[in-house]
Image 1 (cartoon, helix red, strand yellow):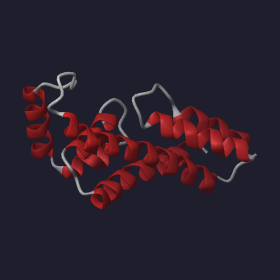
Image 2: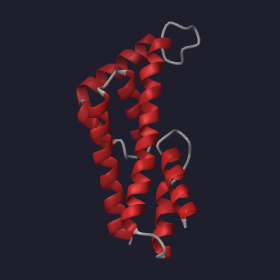
Image 3: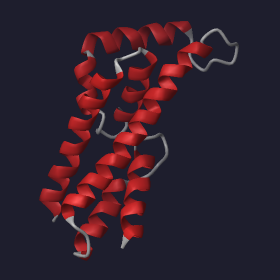
Length: 140
């Protein structure tokens, strides 16, 4: 039984990175098995997904230190454009970190632009936990 929770945790962690994982498919499978506590499934999926976002934030935070390297993957112009967009939409855009395609880059950019970690963690957690609560309520 513990292996189901571990599988969910790691699929949720992977889903918060650029890797092609789907935590919802694993969560749905475990919910329908009726062998797992829905509250623990929500907590496990949330912990994994938030952990993946924290990894992205750490990568973004440290990526800026490498900005002067010749192999740095982003041009000065693209960094400035991303900075303007993040400032325009604001830190509250992190509430959308759960959204496929845009969420993972948001968490990386938040680290890149030194969003305070506790604020980052709060906003990302609200969105990600909310997503799993709603998903579970809809498909249980």
